[in-house]
Image 1 (cartoon, rainbow, N blue to C red):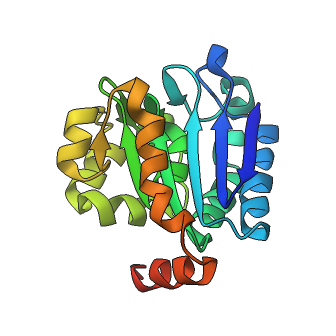
Image 2 (image 1 turned 120 degrees about the horizontal axis):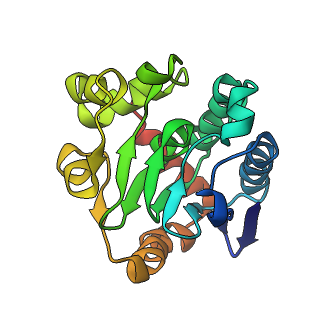
Length: 206
């Protein structure tokens, strides 16, 4: 299930399937894409993406992954839609991030996480290619060698290493995560949407 709230210039998207480690089904991917599109239509000035429970997302739902979801184009479409939003986007990673769910976090402007989270993208072991935009986004954050450690060597890194590498920007206690994410959006929410979009465009790396 995806919960979305668009209010006062802020869009809050929550992956809410904690009993299945927030694993994503095809329907959930469509709902996330629709929520991102709604944020654009609403001229949101900031967007926060988070999850419930202690795992942000384990990636594709296992049963649907076996049926082809793991390599479906919807993952890349969602990540690109997030990357293209003309507003500030914050991934508030409430726990472990794995597999295809990496793309959503990489497409956001800022990534916050909690102690004890782990980060891995086991495409080499599973015989899949990563989403088309993910390797370049990952390498831009952590460098080519570390991107290959994650994608080719199957490295599982913890939150402290993720911070040292530049994969995430801050580590916060779980009970402070959402307050910190909201605090980071305050200036954008007080600005005109065109001003937010202009600064986003000025800081974009091609």
